[in-house]
Length: 318
Ligand code: ATP
Image (cartoon, rainbow, N blue to C red; front, side, top):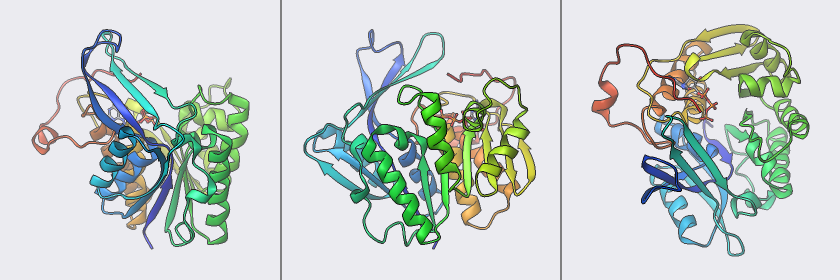
């Protein structure tokens, strides 16, 4: 089936309504954020049925998270954890133009996800499983859940997609490298930034070109790697064939979420039979579109999206 299953932590997102740090702001917007649920939302929008598995607290933040993800049409399999709080994320638009994201997730319900949270048959019936490096870093039980999902996918011959999504605050680089490699080796497609590709390949000091990073990362995985380069676009290596795609020019409001939208665009294309060049186009367009809105997974209103962009763009990447 073309059905995708993903698992991870989704948090209540406090997002500054105006430019300024939380220290100075009077008001923030309430939203929802989590890499895996962002990908799930992107997939459902692209017509691919998707299940997100996660754990939230029995608190208002958890209710909001579940309501937001469900509203988008994602099939939500959530465990309610009475002993832990739903994690929080804050997003500030700083006066210098950067977006700053901070996390309050240590000991959260989402980080306590465990193997038993993934129902029998769910992985086994999936057409694809999508995982990220974040879940390997959240807790021992979350890492065990990743391992269990990988083992179940392997047994059922379900392909795995992996977005490295390194979070340096959660794990040291050497530990991270071992864990990411172990997941990448069991994945049919790996997504990474250039820095993440260097981390996984153990080549942080060398000035490798992006094509060789993609090529070598694809060799760790089962044939496909896509290296995301922010406002410079992306490079893909698919069965030894390299493709480069510049970014689709847009007026950037907030680049957070571009990576997740990009991944959803790629996976939706491939799952519906597109070749690598078309998948890269759809991924780059989806990533660019996500930059035009303040939220991590929302779409721009259609009129704004249709407006052509001219002139040089400012790079707002963090
Ligand atoms: P994040 O984790 O913040 O969502 P990421 O590092 O995973 O980001 P990026 O490389 O920042 O991913 O973005 C993913 C893709 O989105 C890029 O490869 C590019 O195609 C598109 N993109 C990102 N930034 C821009 C931009 N400023 N303009 C146009 N497209 C962009």
